[in-house]
Amino acid sequence: MRALNTRLVKDDLLRIHAEDAAFTLSQRALAVEAPNYRLIDIYDLEQRLVGHLDALVLAGEAGLTIAQAEAAEGGQNAAAVFVHVALRQRRKELLNVMEFPEDDRRSFCCRLAEAAAWCAQEDLAEVMSQWMGSSTPFQAVALEICRIHRVDPRQHLDARIGDFDPDVQACAIRLAGELGRLDCLAALREVGGDDADLAAVRLGDKKAPERLHDASGFPRDSEMARSFAETFPQALRRDEAIEAIRGLLAIPGTRRWGTIAIGALGWADGLPSLLNAMAEPLYARPAVSAFEQITGLYVAHEDLEMDEFPEDPEGPDLGSVEEFIDTNTPWPDLMKFETWIAGNQQRFTNDERLLLGVNAWTFGGVPEPWVKYQARYRWIATTQALRQPDAPLPNHRSPVHIDGRHFTRRW
Image 1 (tube, rainbow, N blue to C red):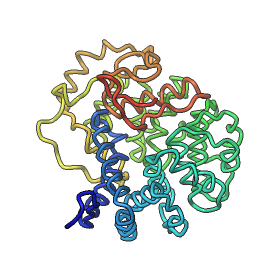
Image 2 (image 1 turned 30 degrees about the vertical axis):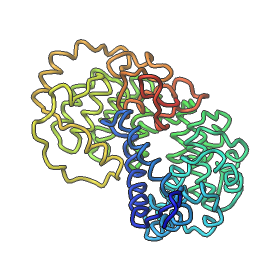
Image 3 (image 1 turned 180 degrees about the vertical axis):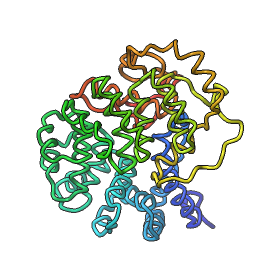
Image 4 (image 1 turned 45 degrees about the vertical axis):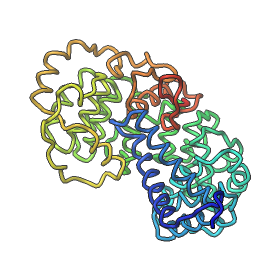
């Protein structure tokens, strides 16, 4: 007869936990950039993720074996789940022989870091210094973990900005920009490139934003292009930003980013340009997001969307994040928007930068509870970071927790 306190392990159930953990990890990575996810939705995803990970860890050797087998079948998220389980079970030796893909290795490192960052500090302590000082790809993972937790590795970061490994260097540059490390600005200028230019703008470089004047030099990578579009207009003089945005709108390959940049600038007189973009299926939903960023309205609640959504238009591959953002953005009803803009544009002054319908400088510190949607946290974080270059970028991707009656996060 089985003792009542004997642990019963079922491999098929553990396999479901491993698969669901990998899927939930990928969903959270998308959700923290999405326009329709609220803090309560992020919290729900995170609690489900933690539950699946805990089940694998508590299952001991059986959980580790299942996680390792799932990782061997391929996929960034499955590999990330295995890293998390191995760290919490103090089996770091299993990670020393882990293979990293040749293609898209930076993305792979980022996903491993996202899962590892859910470990407790004591689980990470014994590997972080080892990884940071190594010459393996885990060096990039360690830098990403520091970025997620907003931890400054100090001299390790200084050395890595000039690293020969492009993935390690990119992670170091991104970390310097998001930590507010002004002392790294000269090194970033020397390195150059998309990552360094974006980090330099966040650190208050007055020269780097001029790159936006040349639409032909805009980043080809969609994640970087969105970061440029949401950041650079705020770092330029208003007249320069408007001129640069018009240049982006004039070229089909950068029209999407020009549309997003109108919202980032908070340009009330740009609402008619957004109306024009809404008439083109490829740019209709980015125009809706820009409209919401300027006005503060949530289109899905304002009866401004189509009753029936059309099929997604054929266009360039924008990557999973941009596609997820588009999928979760309403399709605009053009006639309703025309009526709304004609009757309401005068409410918004063009003399100031608007964010969610008010002066952009209104927002300081953790957003008020009425700011519910995840993309709005990203917009506010970018604004606050540019206002204070020597402070870390507010962490709009940090875990959500309950504070009294509200959902909030470490900002």
